[in-house]
Length: 343
Image 1 (cartoon, rainbow, N blue to C red):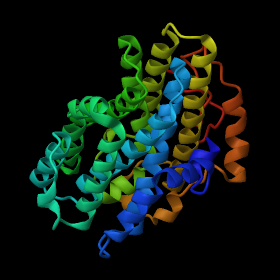
Image 2 (cartoon, rainbow, N blue to C red):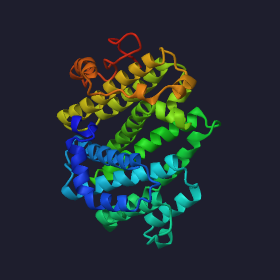
Image 3 (tube, helix red, strand yellow):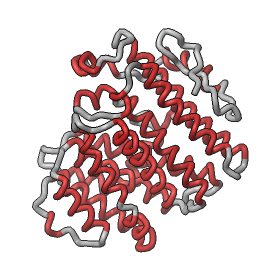
């Protein structure tokens, strides 16, 4: 996990080495309109997708092969770029939808040779993913058109009129479909397992939304957090999804050791997120006020999980995890850092 979360960790080195020629070409396509953070976001998604694939493989006893790893890396890049085109560059839905539909249907995309550089970069990675996946897997990926619709519909999260129910459904679906795509790469197809992984993806997306609280608030993106009344509700809502996921994983007919390792890793992520939320709460004076968050310097919301204070605070809670107890997990709460949050 350490090597996945450090920009210069081993996972980041791995994905850069795997995708180096394509990354180099992507930089050549930049006319100055593509910010450095775009390339960083692509790399992070590559790492996250690879880590997810390896976690799923370890859970199901199916280690990703070398070819699978390459596909996972390029799948991560494509998911990043769909997100970037939709949320960061706000390119028109029709243009984006047509491009993606053509790509997934096998079109040559030549008509986009004069497109904006960010779209050219997206096309570059789409072509590489199609090449790496091969015809059979590409068909499976293409049939997951939900990914396109989910990403395009995520634009609704910019609307003041979007409902809590719509955001919650979109959150679970966005994370769930992403994890199922990773599962398809390594050949997982058992129904009960996929159902559990779908909810796991939603849980991971909710944790990502917690981390991105400041960024999303400034950008005007509404996540489940923006329908909560206070930080306690944010924690309790996240914890409810954790309990649901952990129960589903524990009920799978898989080796106990595999389930234990998978849940241990998920719980470690969860502990770190609750630590960050506790720190965010302190920054906000323990009051969930989005106007205050919007006006606060983003530097104050940069909480490193590798700082000495984070290490000291989180390590005990992580190592004391008991995977059989799906109901309770020792986490951080505002002003009460040794409390448990219960469903």
